[in-house]
Length: 174
Image (cartoon, one colour):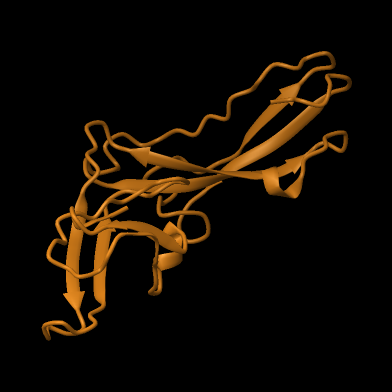
């Protein structure tokens, strides 16, 4: 969008970037590599659309690939902030189903009435966006009482924030 007025001619050049620098999609395998130029005439304030051609059938049904569309250059009379020069794009095949493809629960002790740390490993065939949640349920029979802010740890624990809500009666972690 052109949001800071419509005086003067403005142009921007954009291009998609995939693996290895901007996502898992591969140029000329999942999408057509190249650049696009968007231009606004003086007085034009309408939104413009960046088009990236996707290659038919290049993404298997139960997979997701992503690429980044980046602002390569823009005319001098634009006021483009550095944090607004790229956007991530997810590509799912028609009929895509989000699936857990790896799910594993391990414990560090099997002793009765002893502290035990559970390690839960999941791998999805999709990419999680901001605000995504995973609910783990059925972990009943523990002595761990309800905790609205149970700490999360591990290498990727921070992906889901620093804590999760634990409910003992249902064995649910959200």
